[in-house]
Length: 220
Image (cartoon, rainbow, N blue to C red; front, top):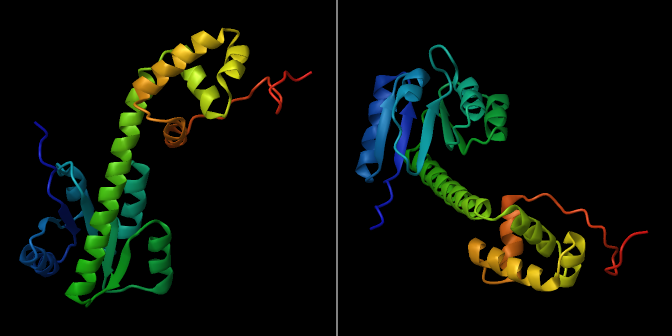
C-alpha cells in the first residue's frame, strides 16, 4: 500500500523571537505546518522531512547572512525554494537574491497575505521540482536495467534511425535489432517511439555519431 505523501513544511530562519512566533502563528491559522530556527546552523542540523517545503529566511542573521547561506545551500545540493525577509533591504540585494533563484524578497513590515502568496508559490515550485526529480530517478532506474547493446539500440533509434540502419551501424541483423528494440520499449515502459524520444531527452543521453549519411548510406 502506497504511503501518504508528507505534508508541506515551511521552515523559518530568523534571529528575532517575535518575528518567528508571528510567522508561525500566521501559518498555523491557515493550516500550514512550520518549524522555526534562530540561526542557519540550527536549520542545517535539523532533520528535515522528505516532502514539499520552502524556507522563509531573514537576510541579516548572526554569523552568516542570508545571501551567503543561499549560496551555501546551493553548493551543498540542497534545493529548497527561498523567500527572503528583511528590515534593511536594498535593490541590489534583492536583485542578487532573485537572480540566485529566490521566490520573493519582502521588506519588513510586509502584509501577511504577501508572505502567504510567496509561500504557496514556493511550495508549488518545490512540489513540481520533486515530481520531476522523481520521474527522472525512475527513468534512470529503467535505463540502468538495459544491457549495453540495448542502450546502443535505444540511442540509435531515438536519433531517428530505421531498424535496418541500426543493424548496419551495429553490424547485426535487422531481426536482432527488432528484438532488442522490443526489449528497450518494454523495459523503458514506452508506449511509442515518440515517448521513448521524450524519455531520452529527460535522461539527457548524448547524441549519437552515425557512420551513415543523410540518405542512409555510409560516409566515404
